[in-house]
Figure (cartoon, rainbow over the protein chains, first blue to last red):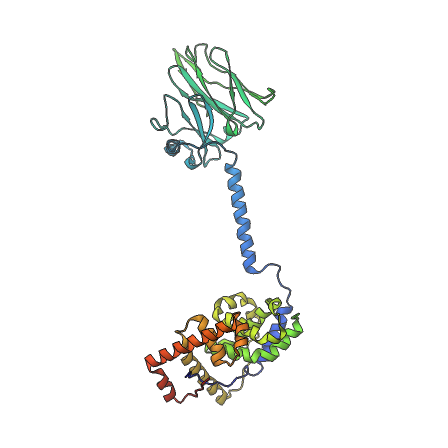
Length: 243
Length: 185
């Protein structure tokens, strides 16, 4: 084979540089080494940051659990007007409670509370989207939140949430004083489709007492909530769960 | 073999010159070749547990040097702080003859590096070690962590490719014409 490579003599380090380099090498290997290399330190920092972000994210959203939602519900939450002061997270919407043909969907919002969308026979998200309703954070932190989230000519939808961890059922009375009991759904939410034969304000304000019960029937908390307000001249105001 | 600090010092005394010249033939600049030498021995210290056969310390160092010069920027970044602590060179008397000889070396090596630049990296490593640095096939296999048969086949392919390149460019003749000292193995 004809391999024409120049033959070079081996040359020494420039004068004294060999000694300098050797001394440097021995000094370096004798230096106490950091327990973590810079690369591992960066990797560890990234890992810690990711865990912190993950934990923070989980802490802000993990309380809300529930079933899958139809695309129309996501779209309904997406149509919420931010001018009203809330920014729902449509992608996190879940089904949290059902009562017959009425379903209650919830999602978190940027304000740290939650928003609700109702689906009832007279108001489906795919045919009559309204953007839902959002609960202010201060109110959402209360042991019990309840209010009307829908109404037809002969029924109202009462919905809300309790923060009591052991809550199993909600009990309150309808316009005529008859007891209404519903099972608490996911994440403390509940919904009740309450039918009536007379106006919700037939007896003046409808201000039932809501009792939260544990699995043994023990009362955990009790709150009075105004569901309908007689405004005079036959008018009846139905405030939502946000007051 | 337990590579302690004293042994590392001995290895440096024994092999630094060869590693320095090997690094020079891979980078083509005497001044630039100094830092890779330090990095090779720092890296050797870091990987000291991988030295299994003390008799193969030199090929083991060649292997580390091959990786260091191949990934020079990355390797030097790892030891940037350590290299920053190398004392600056003292002013030296100007040995004009030696300086000129070193410049000639650099011209020669850069010419060869340009010629072999077309070789695939794996073949280039074998070619420089065996074809230019007189490392045995066995030691090259240790250095590069490949079987001897692979060393032979890569070297054979590298030589064939070099012949083809030289034939197609007429470079062989021009190299001879410059009076460069040639050798044939």
